[in-house]
Image (cartoon, rainbow, N blue to C red; front, side, top):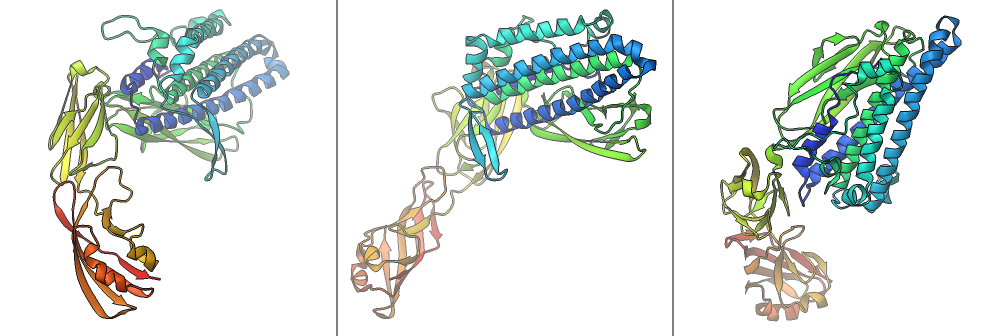
Length: 511
């Protein structure tokens, strides 16, 4: 029934890797979304552990009422209830910190059309909220003290509990040492200039540690009385990982099993498509991760329920793979480079710019004056690669190179279709506009052929324009009345890259 003791809940190391990878003044949407996914996954895991714990508490209640187990239950049930109370208090306290953090990040409620309900909306990438709350207002040291006190009180519930779990207790507030071997500060490590969504994920991870600790201690208390003797009507699959954020080459360890496990449950466990050996109701899967970004491993657990029926549950385990040295490239405009315009790029390095070298395989990469800000200029359609060496660790990012999209020829506010004759006749110029394009790129109209037909034009009349001026069409425009058709063809424009291209011409019907 107990959650696996392995992995050892190395939360501190996990979050250190997280912060190393993301702490920069510009946080990409991809990283923000990845943290949201991990935070949701942690909260789901906490709910599953709560279900398992409730099964234990129900079993303890039954053991108190049975003569054959009453004497032992009287001793161990209160100890389990003490663990429940201590854990519940800590969960409530951390929930209050989450609320304060969200409020500091401008929390508001907004309507979600898809969910048909109000949802939380806050500045997920805000770097100041966590710093103000945990450093300036002192909640960081307070949290550490409360976690340390919780650990001491849980271990001191009974001497045998302390002996059993002192070296493997899930809650640990000691940050990893720096590369120089120096001790690091708890608050500085986890909450200094940390994006709000990352700080929320750290708090959820602490709550996950607490839930695991509660399960560990309560299971121990229960086992001193006897096996679970309760209907497993809410048996759930429990899945734990050693990390939700890893670097390429690091080991991802997933442990899965059945809550309220008994020998009759007979679980079989498949992780990432492969069956894994099961010992004491738990299966373990280990793999080296690769490929930056968010990943999912599917865990499938089958077991026999109280009615001897096979039940199968699937749990997706999500994790994020970072990049070496915490380096990251974010395009400030779009996800491709365009020919003929300066493409702004932000490059983040977790090692400092004195230890970072960047280059590009095709095109030019020019610093913009602000650390981490660059401008990329490219000349040929294809692909290019930005290479980063951060303190000896290499990472590469591939990007596509495209031409700027074709502009649309417009006369006045219209790109064709029905238009009032008086409005059309008052226009002095036509222009080539780029629509839904993030760059300030301009095209010049070089020439076009214009055809007049319909009302007041017994036969098709042809004229040409040079440049964007319509002055050369004054004679034809004077004859235009409602019912006249005007069509532009052979429209030649020149873009910021200097190349000339022909674009489709619009047609107008005057009314």
